[in-house]
Length: 295
Image (cartoon, rainbow, N blue to C red; front, side, top):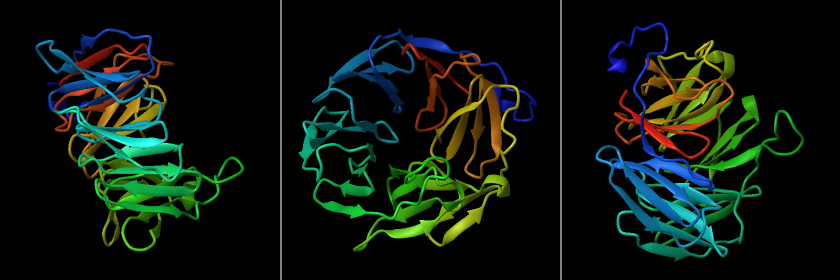
C-alpha cells in the first residue's frame, strides 16, 4: 500500500479503479461507508466501493442549492423556497420553512441539522427548532470591494468568513446571539473540527478554550505537482490537500501521512474526497466519471 511508505520524498503511484462512467449532467459527489454517491438533476446514484452494485435514490427537486453531510447520510436542498432534508438510507424527506426563498450556501450534518447563509445572515434549522436568522458583522474582503464571503458551518461553529485573510472571523452557535471569534487566518474543516492557517505563522487547531498549535507545517505543499485545488476532510479527523497531480494526506495534527499521485494532469480540476474512515479515496473527473483508490 502506498501510504505505508510515509518517508517517500515524492507522491507515490496508486491504482485508481473506475466505478462510474461520465455524465453530461451537473453533478455533486460525496462518499459514505459503503460507496460513492453521485447526484445529478433530481436523483442520486450510489456506486459501491467494490462489487459493482448501483442503487438510486430520487430527490424532491433538482440539485441547485445542495449539501451533503460529512458521512454521506443526509442531503439538504432548497425546493420551491423551502428547505428539504433527505435521509439517504430510507429516502424519507422532511420539509422546513426558511426565512428567505433563496440561500447562498447550505451545509448539513449527519443528524440532518442544516445551516444556511444568505447576504450577511445565517440560520440553523433542526428537526424541531430554528436558530436565527442572525445578521452578522462580516469583515471586508481583502482583495475586492465589499464583504468577505459568509460560509455556513456545523456543530459548535455557526458560520465563518472567507476572503478577509488576516481578519477572518468565525461565529459560535448557541445563546441569544452568535459569539464572534477572531481567526486571523483561513478556516479548514473536517466535520465540526476547525483548523486555521495563519499564513506565514503556521497552523492552529481551534478548541473550546482557544487556538492550540499543531505539530504539522505544510506551508511548502507539493512543489512541482500543480496548484492547490482544494482541501477536504480525510477520514474521521484528518485533511487532504488536493493538488492538480497529487494529494497530500494529513493527520489531525496536520502532519503528512503520505502523498499519492492522482489521475488528473496539470490544468485539470477534478474533485477528490475520502470515505468516513479514510481507508478509501474517490476521484471525480470533470466529466463526472468516478475512480477509487485505497491509500
